[in-house]
Amino acid sequence: MLAQLAVLAPNGVEEEQGRDYVEFAIYGGEGELPDLGSIRAAVGESLVEVSATEVPDDWADRWQDFHKPLLVGERIWLRPSWEPARPGTIDIVVDPGRAFGTGSHPTTRMCLELLLELAGAGGGEGPLTDLGTGSGVLAIAAAKLGWGPVAGYDNEPAALEAAAANAAANSVVLDLGRINLRDALPPTAGTVVANLTAPLLRRLAEGLPGDALPRRLVCSGLLRSEADEAAGRFMDAGLTEAERRASGDWTAISFAAA
Image (cartoon, rainbow, N blue to C red):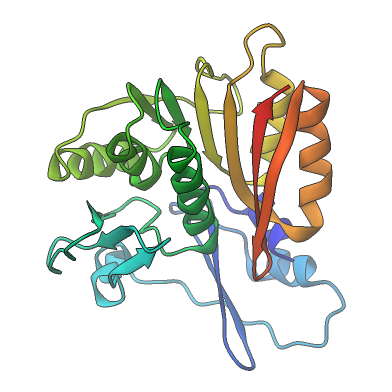
C-alpha cells in the first residue's frame, strides 16, 4: 500500500505502525493532496477502516514534540539542538524544521549504518553526492566520516534551507543545489547516497552514465517487494550488489562499481 500512496504524495509519505493501526502522513501543499477516495482506492479491498484528517497549518513546527536523540551503529549520535552531545560518538545535530528527515526513519538509519561500514573499510574518502538530501542528515554524516567534497541535492527549497542550517550547526561544508531528480541528475562520481522512492531510484538507475559509474552507491527508500527489481536495474547499469539489509518493511542496498 505504501508504494501506491507514494505515487499520490507530492512531497513524500511517512508510515507509523501501531498494534492495531497503520498511520500514513502524506505531505503536500494546498490543493496537492489526494482526496479520501483516492486513498481508499490505494487501500484496495482490504478489510480496514480508512479515515483522513488534514493536519493544521502549524504541523511543520510540531516535530519538536517527538524528535528524540538516536544512536546509530554505536557510533553516530543524532540529536536535536536542545539535547546534549554523547561522549565518544560522532555528534550530529539535526533540526529538520520544515524539511523531511530527522534520521529516525529505518531507511535513513540503514543508510547511516552502511556509510559507517564503508568508512570503516577505508571507503570514506573522495567526493560524495546525497540525492534527496532532505534535512542533510546523510550528507553531514558523510562529511564527518571523511568524505569530501560532499554535495546534497533536493527539489524542495525548505529542505535546502534546513540542510544549510544543519551543516552550519555541525561545522561542515556542503555544496547544496536544487534539482528535480525526475528531470535531471547531477554528476555521480565517487560515492552516491540515494534515500528515495522506488520510481526515483529507477530514474537514477536509468540515468547513470555507463562510462562514469559511482564507485559506491548506497540506496534506500525501497519496500522489500521493490528491492529485487531495483537491484536488477542497478546491476543492469553496471554496478554489483555488495550488501543488502532490511528493517521492517524497508530495504537498503549497497552497490560497488563492477
